[in-house]
Image (cartoon, rainbow, N blue to C red; front, side, top):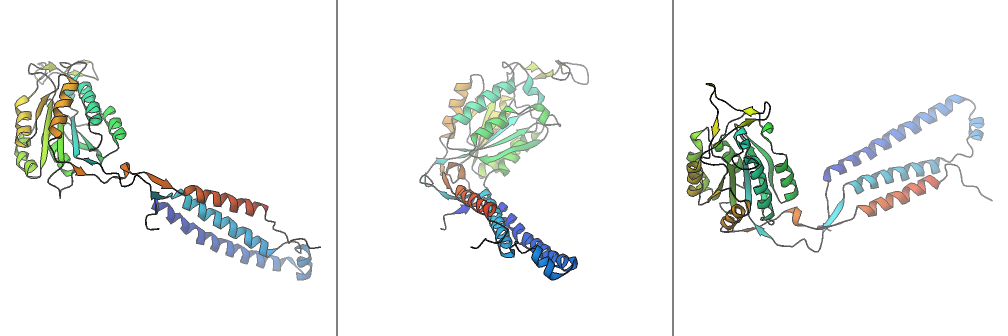
Length: 334
């Protein structure tokens, strides 16, 4: 019996409605008796109500309350681990940090840097079926879009919806993204962890390099994926469909900062990969991730459960049918 548990325990709190309804019903019975006494002659009232059965009415009320309790219990979904519950999988925890600064809209990588990064992440997710994945987006600030999970379908959805408009503060602050990823890991473990940082490397804050020792001490491998070209490209403003300019009116050129990304990856025993060809880049990063020791993952997404809610639903239907056909009048006797 200890293996049984309810999937949605909070729903069981709704069972508190049952005693409340009992109090309401008792109050109604008391009020009804008082009203009957006010009608007039007790003998006449008794003759008018001679076919009505208090016992049957109470029984119908009890049946309705039992049915309500059964429906609430069914909604909580009683379940038990199935035959594959002990399936063992080994993997690592990977936080993916995607640059959503407007420089990622540059088209030196076709169709543009952001779309190429999406393609890479989709393939990367497919290459990590046993790993837990988290997702962070960043520009001038960083935001945790998805904590570590084995729900890879949800991860793909978050990647699909990633857009520079999600982040009102523009710029590229890599240090904040690394901190956000760091906080997304289990701080007690010094193994099984990696960050995949996808950016053009145009960092507007010099703190990223200072984080390397802390990341290394925590056992976090940072694999950097550079997207863009050393020659750079102008940035198209999606609102005006014109090239972005600085305060002096000069066209802004976004260039790949390879040196910074190589420094971050090298300092954390990771690898820098230039994203030109998506399959080749995925292969390189995946090979580097495979050098990390894998841990047994305990995650409910890997478990199969046997569900028992339908027993409660069937019982509730039976009780409701019994209540419906049970008469409120007295049983006729020969």
